[in-house]
Length: 368
Image (cartoon, rainbow, N blue to C red; front, side):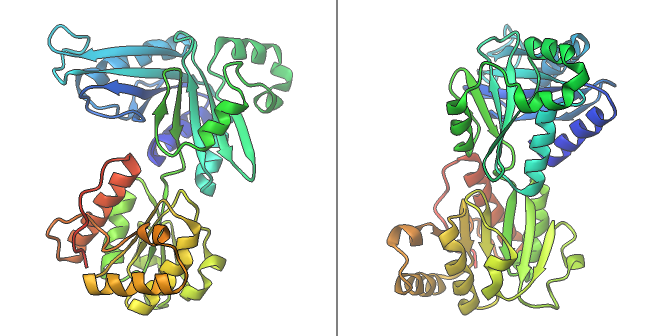
């Protein structure tokens, strides 16, 4: 779920208008998009996001407009098995879509937005045991487990109506019966869209931030590529003449500080991605050795075969285990025959996408 979609939902709800959020929770066989794709239908009929386009999306949007008018949530399935299928599409698969009716004043969305903007791990949890009245909540790691309901069930809304005079506290104390502590613990451990047949878990903030250490030619080329596919990008460079916000307009933040101060300047989590492309072997090693103990989801470093051997050898000398060293993707990037900074940026972004989507990575080549 990207920032543009969330901002659209936030804007509509703040204006007092309900929104129907459509979440693709499962697919089988071939389909245009995989689980986790989302779109929102607004009261003026406009649509933000996509679940794959074509006939499938037309049917989803049509159903969402109907559900929005009725202020209801529901689950719908669609087949894509030829001319006689629901969609008439010939992909050969089927899709399960949950439509969530979101109302103004919903505490769950506020919790989700806050977690995303603070870089906390947040997960949207949907329970479809009752497909005609699915429940949804947000669980976030905010210095401890924090949970807020999306208030999608009819029972919740009935209670909220009865408690209208004190509705500001309802979201904090009332959760659907479908959820329990075990469900929320499982959600916090989730790093990719997951469906067990009853509950769907969609990480919202887990895939959001990339730290680029070194804002030279490759780093500068990488910023707009990663920002363009939904990442928040932080550029960190020890050279004051480069570490200027105007040099990286697509970056969320630019840090100008020595690499020895990494832990003071940024907080790298297991949900973050890190690309190291500083101008020297020594600074590459310094950054990698400081970042590796934080166990980021992705850690890659530019380098030739000789430089790779040097960095990994120094890591071994510093006491890092073989398993820890194996977490370093070096040379970083998928082999595309890339040579220019812009091409290398594409190869690195492609590898990051593989990790984000849980797709097998091709054999790493020689991005340098």
